[in-house]
Image 1 (spheres, protein in one colour):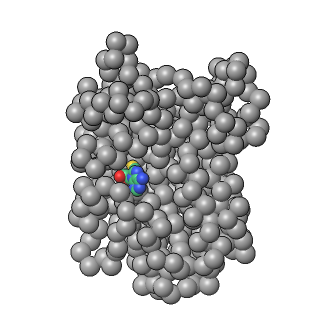
Image 2: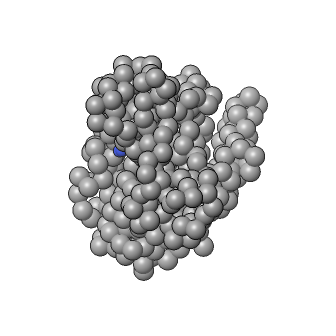
Length: 361
Ligand code: SAH
């Protein structure tokens, strides 16, 4: 057990079991010991590899998606380019570099990075070239108002979820309690929950006993805030993550450490915790706030539509045989159905008058 685990156990002993969402929030973002707050978990030497860390092509194509959307918006100047959860800053750096081909768009863009982790914020400052006019915020609601483009890769899967399990007596919330004999942490089930009746999507409420439903209140709130801003000021958002297009049952909360599955409760703060994203819930929140939703489409489909084939060809043109093989492998990994191509999906949100963004038509 980690020091954070001991702290959580002491809190549970005193005040009772906590929700899975509270546990996730503490394990990921406790200021002293949260998983994201202290280190750099990305890359081959870390715990997991994300699409921008696989290849520069990912960020470059998203940069060009931004330029295309900006032109459809009527080329507003200035326009905010907001990235949620930028990790090492690789996606933003690659996107801004690709935008050198559209200097008017690049000149209009004001990068705003929303990052809760001071350690990763410092890392992002290193990654972005000196002279990049970026601002950092801990939360989306601190970003100034205005026309905006929003990008988020593997951000929503890191937001806390609550879990509800259907029992014969009703929907009960899964909680984190003390383990047997008061040692360690273990999952437990609360009494039938009145909140569950409100939070669980209507289509799932009659699921059979044993079914588990996950709900991310912070994810829904952030999608609603994006939708409100898009409807009020114009713009579009591109949300890429792994998850499902329609609400469904099934527990997906998982811990990952050094590229392998890890026990969710064993060592809080030392492993990444994620859950699959319910894209339908995000789309509904943004739509209710006045935006339009498109997709989700498979990541492979989106990247092919945005021109990963041509981009890979261009990179191969100036590459050694070994580098060319790396480009091919990266394209395969990002787009193939057996790799990241269909597990990962992209949802677009936009001002209702903007029409379908590139890749969603
Ligand atoms: N987009 C990056 C990193 C994904 S990991 C990539 O694709 O490589 C998740 C990122 O979201 C990290 O930067 C993490 O610190 C940040 N994050 C997690 N929870 C957050 C929260 N509640 N608010 C803001 N940022 C958060």
